[in-house]
Amino acid sequence: MEHRILFGSYPIPRFGGIASHNFVVWTDKSGRPLFEINGGAANADGSFNYCAIGGPLTAVVTDYAKRDLVYFPEFYVRPTSRTTLLIEGNHATIAARWRAAMGVAERIRQSELRYSFLTQNSNSVATAVTKGMGLMPPRQAIGRVRAPGSHRQLSLDPA
Image 1 (cartoon, rainbow, N blue to C red):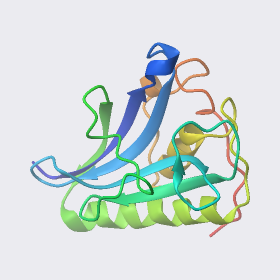
Image 2: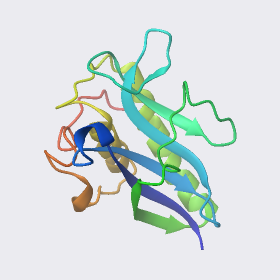
Image 3: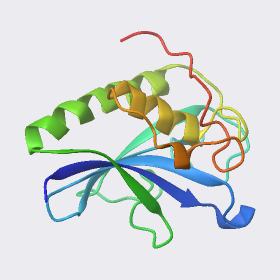
Image 4: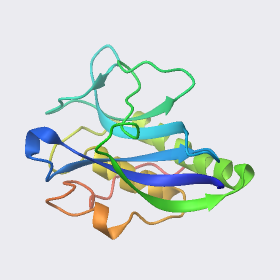
């Protein structure tokens, strides 16, 4: 198996698993997660707000070698998360795409955009990050009910 970038969806239990939280993850040759990007809202102390209603929109890059769930969420390892392959390749190929993803994540963090559960959220971040790598999110993982905000085009300054 090659290195992979996957588009993930975590069905949110509080919404009966109908609405999902989307994310992007890089896995190694054995399928272990290396890095994950999650959008959402940040708390005032910089920690990830798992139950956000509002706040600053953020994009968090989780390094699985340095785990800290307060600041760096992990959705790929949750048993109910589903993933779809976006791209597979050698380490250099995937690393190049991931650098582009991290650039988009940084622009989102610096953007001063506000989190909104319905329009500008983790799903719009996952879509923006995926497109920033020159890839397209899987159709089955986006939609106004399944993934509110996934169709939202974030207004980011160009890199």
